[in-house]
Image (cartoon, rainbow, N blue to C red; front, top):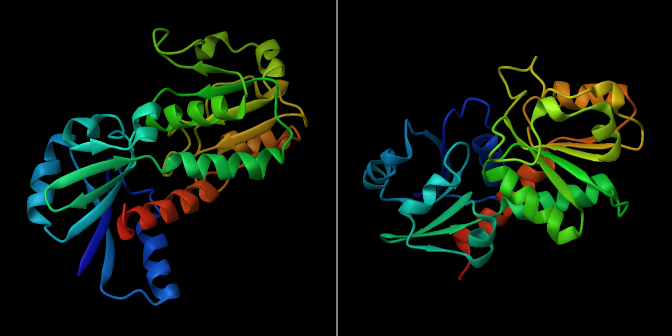
Length: 246
């Protein structure tokens, strides 16, 4: 049996196992499974690997996309530049880290923007997913400011987000877990009344399909996109990494 999976904490919201199970069925892929491995800490990874010798690759989600570096033998050039890993390939005892989130973010930006690039963006959050978003925005030539609860980690705090700042940043990306199932009534602290039909909102959260962040943007006429297209693109990129010669 070839095994794959997802590590992180918590994992109750994840669609990854369902996505891969359906992929295996749809494409007639036999002898494979994909499971969720909720680790209490990244320090539990060696024990998981020892207990699962057939685990050939795994995805990494919150809060371990940056902490995983200490356990890797090698990292792809792009993942190193981004500063976050969400995909690991296992070759014997050797672990190599990659970032396939970036492929999902690139695809999502194309879907949402259709070539209409905003003059400036706000990125909510500073974790591993945010690192990939920042990389993609810089790659596309879109200036951005990072919003964080910790003033040492961002350009702005949430208390700094006046209507004028929101009006001046036509794209807003939620790269935090705020609004994820089961806490679906939560939303990032923004002056949503300042949003307009000229705004684009991208939420990396995909469960629920319409978060409060996106719902409030839709009410203001903004274009919105959830994280499901990103999930699909990064999952397919991970599958290629695990199963093709590198």
